[in-house]
Structures are given as C-alpha cells and as structure tokens.
Image 1: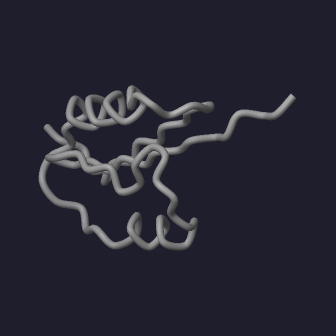
Image 2 (image 1 turned 60 degrees about the horizontal axis):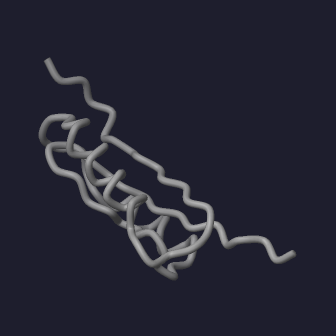
Length: 79
C-alpha cells in the first residue's frame, strides 16, 4: 500500500485572513516560515475570517491525501 500524501495549508488572520501556503501548493518549509514571520500584527482578531478561509482551504477539490490546516493569529486580544 502506498501512503496518501500529507497536504498542508497555513492561514494567517487578524482583521482579514490570508492563506500563505495553500493546500497542495509546493512550497519549502523555509519559504513558508519566511512568509509566516513577515507580517506585523494589525487590526482586530477576526476568527470568523480565519476559520472561513481555513475551511475553504481544506475543502479544496481535486486533491487527494490527508489534509492538515493551521490557523495562526496575531495574538492580540480584541475588546
């Protein structure tokens, strides 16, 4: 038996959400890490936008394999 590939997606969010590594995208760990470290915290923490983009990434059709989604926020509390 051949193991299914592991597909990963990384979504950053604050006021808006953005996939910095899309599901099925071939990107090195180093490149993904640099994209992750580049943004500066700003705006509010819109968890709804983060979850929506994460679900959209995981729901991508036409890709076979196990799927892992990672959501990362700026960590700033909103009141």
